[in-house]
Length: 338
Ligand SMILES: Nc1nc2c([nH]c(=O)n2[C@@H]2O[C@H](COP(=O)(O)OP(=O)(O)OP(=O)(O)O)[C@@H](O)[C@H]2O)c(=O)[nH]1
Image (tube, rainbow, N blue to C red; front, side):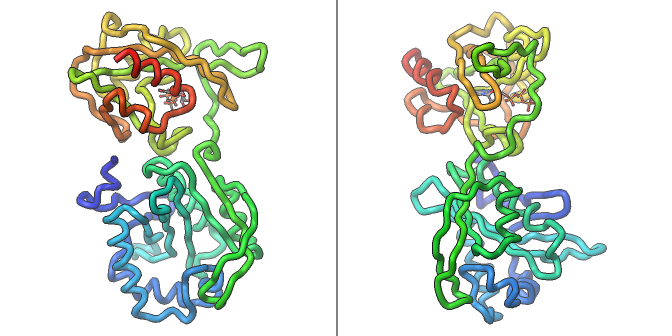
């Protein structure tokens, strides 16, 4: 896993255009209490009591550190700046379902910071971070049915409404109607324009053909290198074979030599790239044609130069790493071959 998840390394703050999302600290308690002990804020939140006891702020902050240590939830302070002073704007959090592949997103913003897109900016970043870095498939969220602002935030950052329900609200002393939302990797931004090599169109589907070269690096113990697609790329969080789009006029081998150097800091020669198989897969926005090469010799030390997590995986373990759908047949072939 990435450093961001290692408790020993501490949680590396997430930055957005205007805010920093960082672990909560004991000294945030007074500001947190001031912001959340406000009926207009508390009445929108399912698990927050009103009035909010002063001591609960410290208690809750302490519990967030424990949850982060055990990898069950990440509740972060949304902080901004007023002049030189750091100010608490609100909180955003993601909680994993025990033993599940889903997590729940929640957030609130102090009333004096409303109307400036703070919730969208912070919750959008948290959602993308979670899908890229946690072993989850989907993120769910809910908002009071009549909380139009929060419903709009969830839609804006990529959630789809999946239905309605009733949920207990501590501050209201009972169940309230809510809208339910869900987001997966496929709901995140579609791939940007695809400046692929001489991208022809597949006549039958009208989809552009995207040419991508990929490589299974195999180490002396027969393990295969997988790289995790980092936050910000389509399908972030899925594991893949290193490689990338072929530029115009580039051979697949030349594309791989370039990509392996850029992404992993290693040098390979064309002679060490053995053609193995290919993937041909229809994604919604394009049709992927991806030759997969095998490579057992390279110069240099494999390093994730773009901040991506890397894993050397035994062939029989490959299936336990979620990969893009195009890779599934390749993984089966590779397992049989190695
Ligand atoms: N490298 C690689 N790409 C894959 C694999 N499987 C798969 O579906 N793809 C798809 O192929 C495309 C590769 O694009 P990319 O975004 O990685 O290409 P790139 O490194 O040139 O990225 P960039 O244009 O953001 O710099 C993506 O749509 C990706 O989802 C795989 O195993 N390895």
